[in-house]
Length: 135
View 1: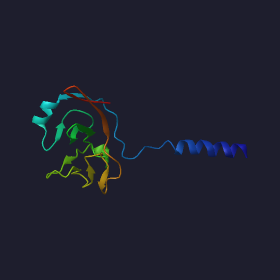
View 2: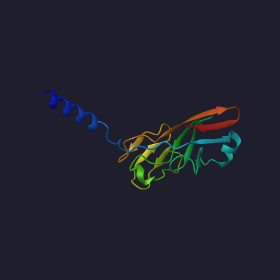
View 3: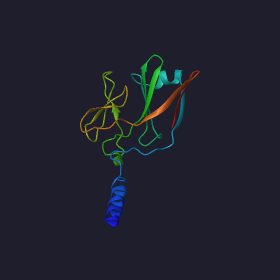
View 4: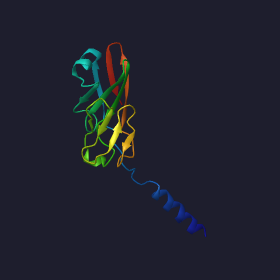
């Protein structure tokens, strides 16, 4: 009986260590931009930054002094590293062109299937006139 219980415990431990679905890996992000430069380069309050994170970085101005930053990698089949793109018209939604899933740019939450998990969010701080995005 002890042997059977030990085997069951070992099996449960290995079964619970499975791969997490739709996981965006941690890539180093260390990006800064001035508020003035953001205003010039951003389109509709959204700045797309290549070569940061998994599929690029997206910095979104929510209100005058409120910003958020996300990895552009969709959480739908993240192994494809499909970069979400902001929708036109100021609706604060991003589209995964590979799957058709949609995400809110206010908090990264999924808005349309097959998206089930939020976009990966990065820490963003404003120091003086600089926007700093780090992980």
